[in-house]
Length: 255
Ligand SMILES: [Zn+2]
Image (cartoon, rainbow, N blue to C red):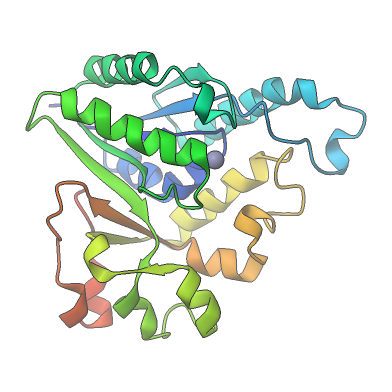
């Protein structure tokens, strides 16, 4: 049976967080899908490449960038729920949740990934998409769908400092409790390079060669983005992170 991986995001460019897993899944024969909540029209055009272009045209530009990103990642299908960007309070939540559920049903049995409950960066749109995905997932046939949340690094894993080599204040910002992480995906060099290229595509948002993503310096971004951490919604941890050696934690997740 054909296997599917679906990433549910809020804005064109959010697919970066799960790009490594999307690439891995594709190489393993999965069909991959992106469902985006908004068109990203509330952002600002940044950088020298777009001088003279009005902010109103941003939606069109970001849709084009999204299309290129989907091509790069070899995404099989993508959808946009067309909700107002940066105005989660104005979303017709129930209607969009029903639409999301219908799309997931039409794709069929899948592994679904989305933001965790704080949206990764507390952006209300990210939090909204998390809530919407949890609601839609609850209405899907049991045993046919799995739901995972993209998370920060588990504390015990990062405290070793052997991999990330980042100063303690930064480690505090990018780590969470071990029991909130079910799996870590360590990307190969090739997977990682392709993932970073996604940021190069979004010139309207990250004009300074990847450096502005989550306001991280480039070096840190390159280190952190080599790994993707996920929490299984049903709560079962895949491995006991607190008692594993570092190499044991670099297990492959559900794929
Ligand atoms: Zn976003």
